Length: 130
Image 1: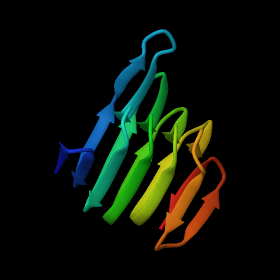
Image 2: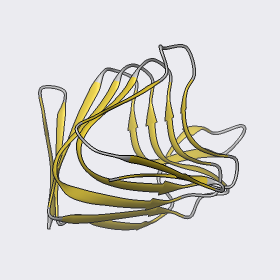
Image 3: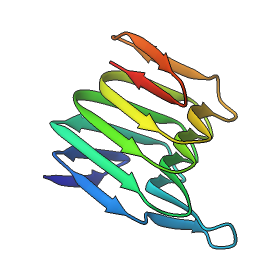
């Protein structure tokens, strides 16, 4: 599989990563399997897996609007948050399972989590969209 980034769009096609993600705060040792300070669109094709094993980890950290779409899936595991978006978080297709001990998916300053074109189910300590 592969991950390809161009023009604000990250395509994941059968991509798998396990290990410590990008360290974006060295004092607190915060890491993220996918990290972006700009608006980011993630397109999912095929089955994708991300496990961030860092001390204070997040599967996806977005400093601006995060949009996830496509026909594939992403299963992510981290110690803190599944998905942390500091603006809006929009899911428009695909299957998403992101787990973290501190939270499921959080939109910090945006309008919340918008889910389009599929059902949403909440479970203890993680969010599953399908």
